[in-house]
Amino acid sequence: MDFSGAADAGRKIWIAEARRGRGNRLKLIDLRSAAELPGGGIDPRTAIAALAAHIVREPDTIAGCDFPFTLPMQVIDRPSWDALIADFALRFQNPDSFRQWALQRAEGRELRRAADREAKTPFNSYNLRIYRQTWWGIAYLLGPLVARGQASVRPYHPLPAKPHPIVIEACPASSLKSIGFYPAYKGRSGAHRLERKAVLRKLVDCGLLERPKANIERILLDNIGGDALDAVIAAVATAHAATEREPDLAQRIEGIIYAAIPGRT
Image (cartoon, rainbow, N blue to C red; front, side):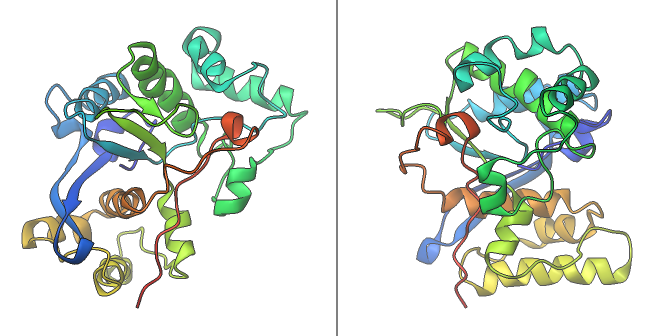
């Protein structure tokens, strides 16, 4: 899914549901915004609550979410990831207080996690363009899911022994970079629409995705922000995520971005 912490997050959070189809290609089953989910709405609190309910609806689910799940080790002042998120919403009651704290901890620098460097993410966790996503994602999605025991978050939690929702951090931009194909596809122009079509064709031609039905393809091409397409890219990355990989000590705090997708031709 493509995530957002904007005031109209329900319009900008997109969820692509898929299952494995022929030749292990992903087959898109559904594509919609968080505002269209049962109980969904435009404002972030309502949209993210509906998203959380949607993630845990089926136990045999893996959800790839496009926002930073954590911070650089130099910034974190808790002994574990679970301790960091346990009181996150209480400590930082809005995105701006979170960003101010992070900058103070980092002495004004925008530090990057090892996972950010490895995946070549566009921004760090508390960058001006992304800190709202980080705050909303941790405080209102991950925090409640973990507190209620409704999901296992990799790599911080062990793989569940029986079907239980798994949540991982994805990054569509990093996924496209992993196959060496990162055009400028977000925008209103005809050229941007053609680039969205090129990205979709690349995923199909690489044998990663079945061609979507006409109504879904139209949404992917017409969505000028590229959010719907980002959700599909995240779904492809999630389907190939090596969630069984055991993290090292640093990754248990800083996380893993499951972004790499096969670059088949």
